Length: 193
Image (tube, rainbow, N blue to C red; front, side):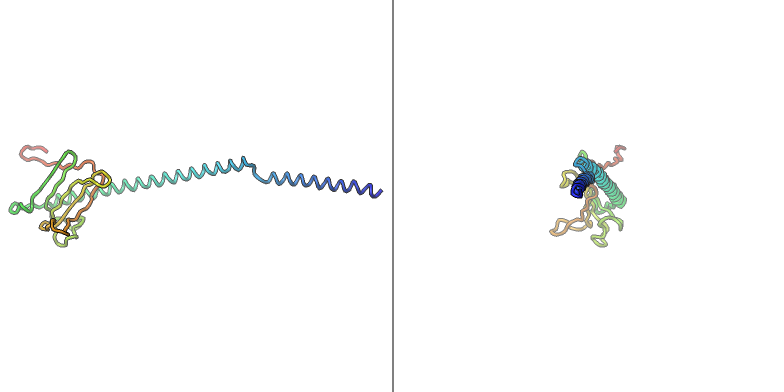
């Protein structure tokens, strides 16, 4: 009788153990993610990274174009100030015209001018030649390496021989990407520009 009762207890134990294993296997399977859930999570993560990257790229691009625009405006201010200061301090003596001549050149879109000026102390490059503040100053447009034109200022002391070897006039690019540089002069005889 004890053997008969022991068999159902063994079977019961085995069945209980088998059932617990199936339940624990189901719980283990339910604890993980399906491949579809993982793929959706990766897709959402990729969308978020793309949005962050495009926003960051837009900020960098906007900053660069803003910096370039500010630099262009600053360069144009410096160029206008250099032109204004040079023209306001222009010097000419009729008794010695061979040194004080005023030369202009013009073509369709670009002009050039060369004259003598007594430059102010804060003028770009004025400290380069010491106390020689009376300079021949020239403004011209020249082709640049990028294929556009630049407004270039050259200056040297009036009596300096710039044709001698090793002696060069001070040169400064005042503006890049110049598309038009025209100088107009008023004709007193005709009464027009």
